[in-house]
Image (cartoon, rainbow, N blue to C red; front, top):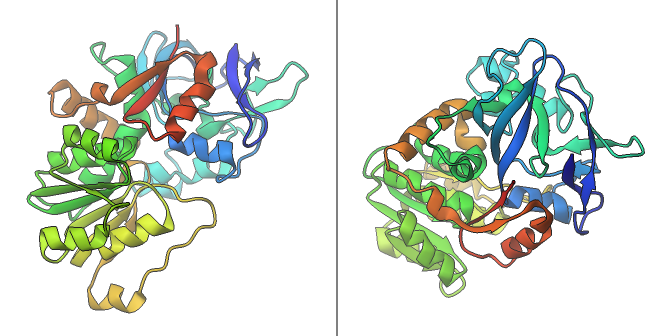
Length: 364
């Protein structure tokens, strides 16, 4: 089968013919139908997230199960599935305590399958990694059955693909916060794919004010479509001062969906006394933010990380699919660009230009 393979950082991904093993015990093969173009993969492409290579990137996808290995009970051939980039093992301490989104076994095995081996090889026998055990920039993937969440037939594949990452990360990161309540004020810093969904999460929670912050006017204008009540261009004005002026003393919740020390510090400063700052976006490996510790204590602020929606991905998928089918969230409206697999490098050039919405790879 064909896949876009990253052999070296800061180089284009050639479309390469790879050998693919059959599914082993507990694994399935999924024919890919849609894959989202996400910044997390771009971090690998640029070297900001060091990852073993060669590797097939892509962790936001949906497709149809077309083969199952021995012992598979969670899905069957023909199931239409949203794919989870954390196919939790169900047995480690994190999974047992309800945090399957940060499964220990998944983290330890990384880009290999759960038995520690690979399913993809180049023509000369070189082992090829699969990003997040998925690697959805490929015609098909062999993955753990736990990565598959069966979905109704009326959910389009493009929508399902986005639910696999950006929608769940953004909406889940808001609605799954334990102290989030109706009527709170919210700021979202960074309105890319994840940020737009954080706005929708705030709207779902009936936030009284939803402030979108970015450095591109066109992205801020686009943010109004997904629940923003106010927008701030941080390249034109001091975002923290503007948020404090709008709210009086800062927001109850500030979300950094971009992932950088500057945006994390902005989010923290924009949070009122007793409020919560949530870091959703992944910063470059090794980057640290400066947080004033005395103020953290005296103002009794909360600073937390949120990975993949802060809870079980499958449970968040269930909620989001319900919201989508009830018309309470807009997912399809985020798709503004469509590409074929051999246009993958063009897709990431558009992401680098900070174009609105989400690009999607659509497979035949």
